[in-house]
Image (tube, rainbow, N blue to C red; front, side, top):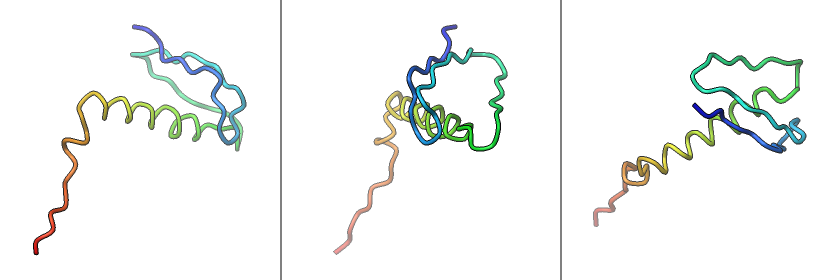
Length: 70
């Protein structure tokens, strides 16, 4: 399996982060306070994974549509 590659990530406390995360392995993100752990986990990995999932399954198809009754 190809690893998840992050290249040049910049957001909040992350400054040009480049790394590879292996797939199929248990990975732990550690570091000192305010080092960007949450930014990496939520803002990059989770949101990008969610975006790709939505594209793959067509999430717009599953969203509820409001119907106005007049």
